[in-house]
Length: 578
Image 1 (spheres, rainbow, N blue to C red):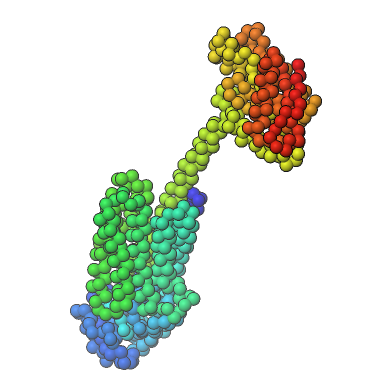
Image 2: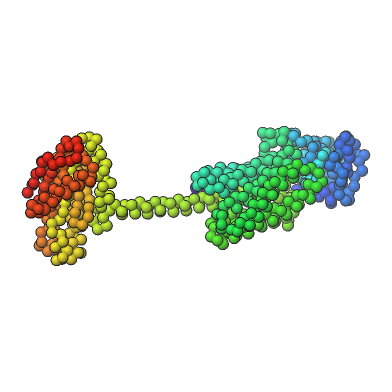
């Protein structure tokens, strides 16, 4: 996961460097300074251009139901060349016709219309018109918009054909990188949402998906597959998606913080503003009149208010210790700064003509990558905490099954380990035997030499008994000075000899450092059964045999055999081995 996030971060860095390194030598046509305007009915033919009365002052009006003509003179030596191209940012119009007028009086027309941009569309929401090469200087260029929603959204640039090609390629590369990063972020956030069952990650994935759709439609890359969506339809969908993305981002940020961390009124206010922006996108996408510019400015103020409320909400939650709030504030930092920047500085004709939309697109990519990386880091921390908890739990369970002094299994661990052995013995009709080993006169060792010496003796005997641990035998310290060994598959003389070897091995242990020359012996009670019974029954039989060994003089082995008992166990044979 960390490797994936580092690659995504590197991709975002390359994208930023490409955008900020974009050439900006194109000449922007300012509507108020460089262009004259005229209005006419939509039925007026293009060839009536020479008879129109253009005004070079004031603002155009009354063109929404007809046509808006914008004319710019190509003065100066820099413009009098053959490789002239006009780059127009797409907007809501029914038809755009461009006239290139030459010094010899000739005019060449090119046009696009909603649903058919032909070969003129370029990545980044732009339309390119290249002046035909005639060997005659260009004098002016005229744009005719039919059914234009608002002249405030018209942006056009004059540049050379070579530069137009370079900028189009650069824009395509930047948009392609951003779309790829957003797609990866969307899929990754969605997978994380299912993996950790967090609602805000699902909202984040929805936001990334919405920005992905918005970026694809705004940049016009979808026209390679769906050329009929060129123009107004794409612009209207983009408006709705932009508002929806803000709403989803707000909901994602709000739901990332646990309820109760932030006052409910602040939480409600953030959700109301966010959802209000999302709902406002529906009528705003459908409007094509002159009020579109005013409504867009009002919506921009509402968006800024929404961002401020969300920032306050996240800041409050951060102060209350919310890690998710901290991550969201870091992710929202760049988009908020970018929005403030584009409201202060006019960048609409910068960055290959992508302007503010390209900056917002890059900032959205940053936000998506940051949140994906933050969620990954948080998930990694949770997994580490979970692994530590599981390790601690496993250690606790292991300690609960082990005798802390000798390290052998205690009674609980012994019962759990012998249960599978007894089941196996019953299934395979094998004999089972339990050996109870009790240290003779152990209390006197504690009384004479002290409890520390007694512990040394117990540990020494435990190390000797542990040698017999194996697939067919399990050992334990059952409590105090009593040890247990359970075996399957041994019976009769073999079992008796094994029990005797245990007794002799314990007697052979050297405890001279703890108790001097005193000999430490043990009594062994053995219960042999076929078929195998449960542990409690087996323990009662072995305990009885151990009692007989103690009563018979200690340092002895007593074996009780019980075979083929269909009901309650009954003694069939008792053997005492000296």
